[in-house]
Length: 587
Image (cartoon, rainbow, N blue to C red; front, top):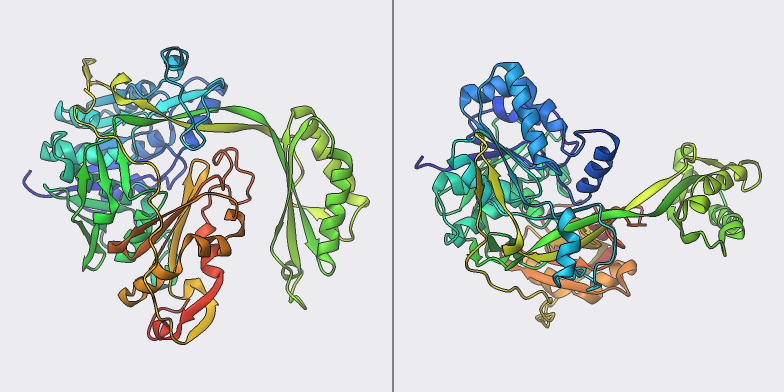
């Protein structure tokens, strides 16, 4: 096995493309196929599923993906490593064995457990672990529905080393799926920090599926075929360096820019934390090695933190919403009339905790059709079920004949539902029972890292920008020369901005200060903003703390996970040096 291991991805979230596993199996040579099913909110979804039906605690779509190609996986001796186990990795492993038996295929299935801390929360609190909120520092006092710690990749390594063909995990760190598989192939130890860091970076690049091959990419117009982009794979070498690529003949593209976009997705400080290693993203170097082949090298790793994140979810209050369509002239007055009518009934109601009105879009002047002359008013309410449930829906319906001209809504207002809460905290790694349950039932405990290092969590002081002579400038959208990728980090939002032209990097570095970001993003005006530079990527990454309230399940923004935040910032106008526009991509 003295060649790079080819690790492919077949899922970026619970609900991703059903055919992706078959595409990766049949599309070309692979050694290992990984699948990531667990976004931060997925554990809450699985908990609700489990309450409704037995066996609902894992990502059942994995089994539907596996069934059509399980014979080919066995024939080609491909290993499969997925976190589809969710809240019930043992149950998912048993269901996988049943599927294999029905197909007449003999493959060894192991699972990794020890991440589920829900039953241990009272004991942890009693022992002095306050499970303080990572962002606010508030001690935990809620009733948890789920609590899952992020595990590293050495449980996966142990399972594969013992002969497992399919490894099912619960909540491991997303990149651990790849780093664990690479550690098995190369027989890395916890001391191989640079190699592990390189594999973690490769895992971060491919974990979100087609986002590495052109999906959600701000330069999408440069990609010839995005109707069905191929899923990515990483060829990971002995030293942790990798080549990101995809199967030949598939859609999308793998370029330095598409890989940069994914590297900047949902990150904070350049020290990217994993339970096995800290990967320093400011050391990453990207080179276009050939068509659809990007080499990732130079990654430095350092000792992992003594703690790991635990994501706790629960049920909050009641949430409901309704969306009104505003058409034609006087839309400001029409929106104000709706708001007045709703507030007249709900302001002062003790059962209402939060009421928000959000305008979406602006009607065109002299619109060519009715939709061009329409915009939306989104109304969201939180509170007790009695006030925010059917009572709110009925109020919205009652406006149909008694409010602005041309009133109608999008869909029928419903009863609403209890919303979920998300609480990120830290627990010491040595408190976890990280365990592999091998195919023969044997249990193997995975020890915590023996060497750890505490991590600096505060953002560094913002450097004084170097003087930059802009020369003649042209007012225009930032996106003419800047690309972006944004996403959620719990209740925070990150947005990474980068330039492809080396000559534009000094301008971006000097221009995109926190003050400039706040000017472009008025909602961040009163919020803490962290700023980090990644010169090798010609990128600046911002973390806007608190923009998403308590996280995707609690966020009251229309864009609850900040997926479009970067594209909005790219649309904001700034003075751009005219000389940087010459020969540059124009979007």
